[in-house]
Image (tube, rainbow, N blue to C red; front, side, top):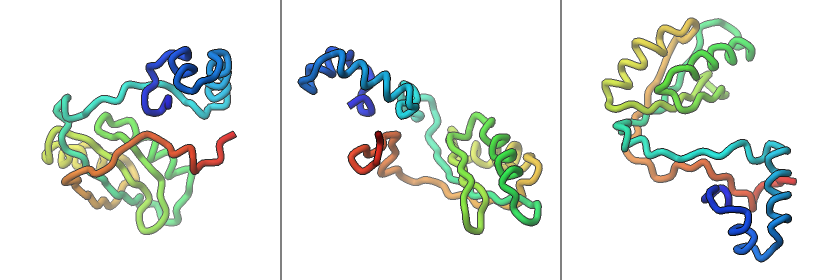
Length: 148
């Protein structure tokens, strides 16, 4: 319930769940303490801020045999750019999967040329432009997970 809407009070949650307020309160605190709940954030529609273009960029690094520590250092540097929403170190022919949001296609081009390509070690990129998003969520299906 908190994943869908983190604003209800513990009293409101307890009422919906038909349990004591103290039960809800202690469960939430335990989830926070165990880092299962990592924070509470507002979800902002990027289009309302003029960020209408999403792209996924696959990137490789140029240093011979892949070394995880070097990948992590490059990934951390890429993650600092404001256009970047996500950076994943991946397996296969590519080293990184990067999710980027910009105002327009030209913004993606500027990001690639003026920022990503300036990161030492970034060698080759492949950019996939998003035409339409069918699902984008931060929710985790806890019914399928094995949480404590």
